Image: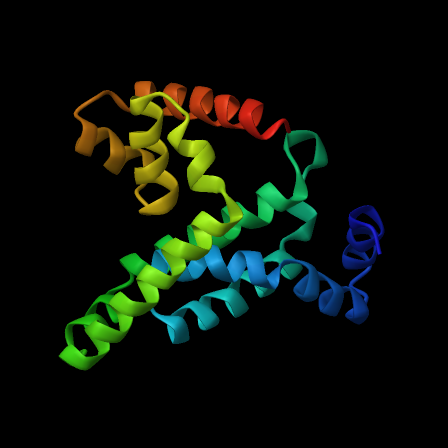
Length: 176
């Protein structure tokens, strides 16, 4: 099934479309979510929440503003960041035993290796140092643009412009 056919079925709320949607995108979205949340169980919950948001908000997707994958990736990223900022999540993290932290570190190292195996970090390393910094903060560490602005001590507008330029540079390397 093509992405265009899938989008038509999702708009029609066809139940088979949800299964296709999940099969096509769950692994890549889970990888992104798990890198940000750093807790497999929480990441699974966030993934479920992401697919519900995609399903319910499909009418807000505008093909002229960007690719479908980019749209759902942003939903996954934003939902993960919302989870990280939630009071319940922060409270639950305070109560983890040291055994869980060791497990999280092990999982984190494995995830970094998975990112390397798909080659994204190799392309990011080819960018200018400022781009590497911005992409690392915004996409790999889950910072908001405002937080990145504060961390780098540069104006918010500069972060937004540099982020856009860096993503365009990355697209050139990826030939998208």
